[in-house]
Image 1 (tube, helix red, strand yellow):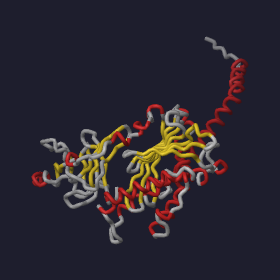
Image 2: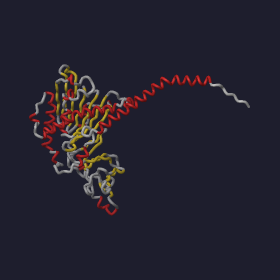
Image 3: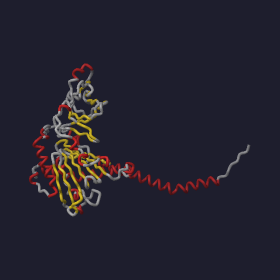
Image 4: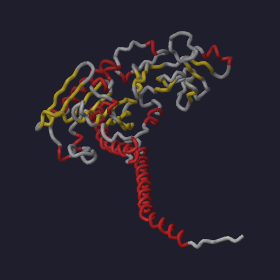
Length: 398
């Protein structure tokens, strides 16, 4: 995150831990290491780190073994540096400052997690089922957030991909917009100008990187998207997308219809359509061809303008990219391994298409077999019965 490699694992108490990806012995990465019953093991020399050797409430992660017992006294002085993290629902939230500490207790937490939860905005998770995809982009992460706060592009750029009759190139339109903001969020509600009573779409930006999109009024929304934007490194970002829905909640039916895979296929196509735009926007901005002050904004772009105000203020206040800066000489090993998901790495998208094709073929073949069985089985049974009736009885003599 912000160029700093991190590792998340579960300790012996099944508690999530977020550590700096650097073993204090020789600064090797934990990538390729092991988690042995809640002890994280360095792949270089087998150093094991655990919370079980704490004699106080420091909550440190300390080495309890390296090489052999002759180094036990040496080991107890090795501590992993970590960030506070907490598991809430199906998410793990990290309190990231750019300065990892030996213990989570060393942090003064200044923001409250409750203000970032979807439930804080009238969204009851229990009413929905969801699909989840991971998306990787080679572009500036703030451009991706801007894209997800842009309502008008979905009609044109995604008009041939999104299902439904109300969002396509033929229905592109301008909207009336109302915006609410406070220290915790920006919220924009869009109404059709011909029907100003009903909410068409509402968006919530929750700093630093969460966007929630409601289709329709919040309480009645048939589907909701929660998008979490993670700045991995310069021009590298990951998006966790959850698409919640109130319809088609029967799990067996969803499995038969391959609903999960079909949704993933649609998501990958949508984000692939965004990808070229976001990459070229990033390039043009970084080359100085267009800065934010020169952008010509539409009325519906007010939310984007407010986001950029927040973003610029946060950069000037916190300088997150200056904490772990990279140069042209910095080894790119982590950046090279980061891009795992579409559209930056299209392999998974191709795999999903093959899975759908294979499973559809299996289902069609099964249906054909069932139909053939229903057609020919009665005749076959009748022939068997007729054969039994005409079969001569063979008597035996004693």
